[in-house]
Length: 73
Image (cartoon, rainbow, N blue to C red):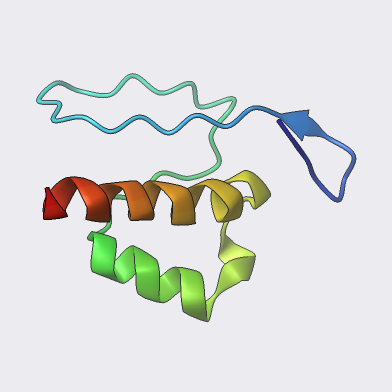
């Protein structure tokens, strides 16, 4: 659990999968969705932190590190 600057507590979960179906999104909970290549995501994380949610800035480096380890195995 992470405490953010706005005193909001959240659990973050990031799931990785090969998924061939349509995603069902709760538009009341999501401001924006975008598909990006991992290299683009890494560059954007370094260049423009302000566009990402606080929880994502915590979770993304961990997820990218896990993906690197999976690919290397």
